Length: 259
Image 1 (cartoon, rainbow, N blue to C red):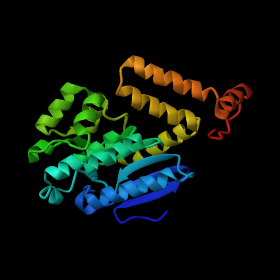
Image 2: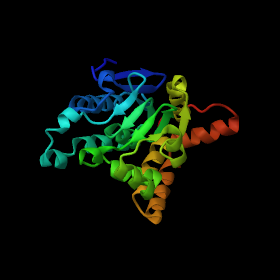
Image 3: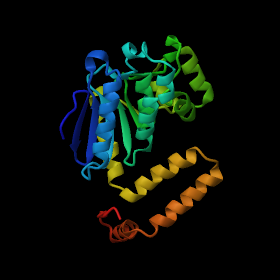
Image 4: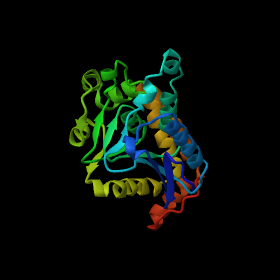
C-alpha cells in the first residue's frame, strides 16, 4: 500500500500498521495528519487483507505529542463546534476491526486521546501519557474528558486533566490506561502478537464482541445484556460457530469463513 507523507501504512500478516510520520515535531497531529489518518482507516476498512490495526508513531520519542499548537492559535468557536478531531477519534473508536495503540513515547493531548480511542493500548516503558490542555486554557476536546474518566475513574481523570500532569507507563498500567508495558525494542512485536491472537479467533465473534462492549459501556447493564443476548443469538446462526465447535471437538485449528 502506498504511503502518505504524514501517515505511513504497511499491511503484513493480516495486520495493518499505521505510523504517524512527523518525527521532527514529535508526530504532532495537524489537519493534514487528521485527513491522512481518516483516509488510511478508510483504505484499511475496505481491505480484506487487513484484519486488525496497530497505530504507532515514527521515531523513538513520541507516539503523538498532541495537536499542532501553531494551528491552535487560529482556532475559534466554529472550530470547537465542528470538533473535527473528536469526530475522527469517534471513527477510530467505532472502527469495525480491532485497533491497538502501540505507544512508543510521549502521548500528550490529542495523542493521548487517539490512544484512548483505540481498543487496546500497549506502552513502551518510555511512554508518558498526559492531557495538558488546561496549560493553554483549553480542555481535552477530542473525547479526552470522557474516555479518560471511563478508563481510569473520575477522580484520577480530574487530577490529570486539571493539573496537566503526565504519568509514566507504569502508573498508566496500574491505573488501567494501558494493558501492558514492554521494552521499546519489543513494542511492535508485542502489539503484533496481540493482534495475531485476536485474528486467530472467529472474526464475526470478535467484531460483535467489540460492538457489544462499546455499546454496553454507554448503557445501563440491563440494556447492555439485551445487546449481548441479541449478538449471541446471531452468532449461534453462523457458519463460523459451527466450524469453531467442530474444530474444537476434532482437535484441529479452525478454518474461519467470516460467515
